[in-house]
Image (cartoon, rainbow, N blue to C red; front, side):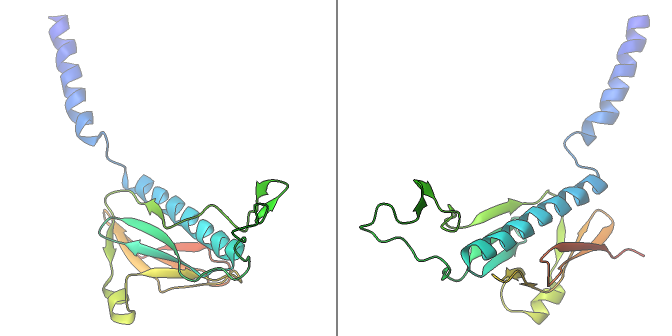
Length: 170
């Protein structure tokens, strides 16, 4: 009889816990998003300053991710000459300004985020994006999103290129 009671209690606990395994609580989902935003904004700003190129951080709402794209070739560091094996190196090391970045870098966001792009589509051409300049500045319109019952707005501080997430719930 005692074994049946213990098994019944374990079945009840398993039934209550199992549906919630694998789902992020709403607060943790927002904290994860903010961490991804901070990393993406910091990487974009550093890439722009290091290469002298203008960099865009583009939202892909369908795939729930940000993509870092270099949109203007760097003029700060000329490419090494094809016949000079030591060009672009300092004591045999690749110079940091030359970088190892080719193509796009992707910043995936957690599932359960819904993007409200109505305001963006009315005000801008193309997908939502933030643009980072070599002088450290950033531009881009705020983007609204929601997770669960929380509505939030992502904006960039223009002089420091840091993301700000504002809660829009009263």
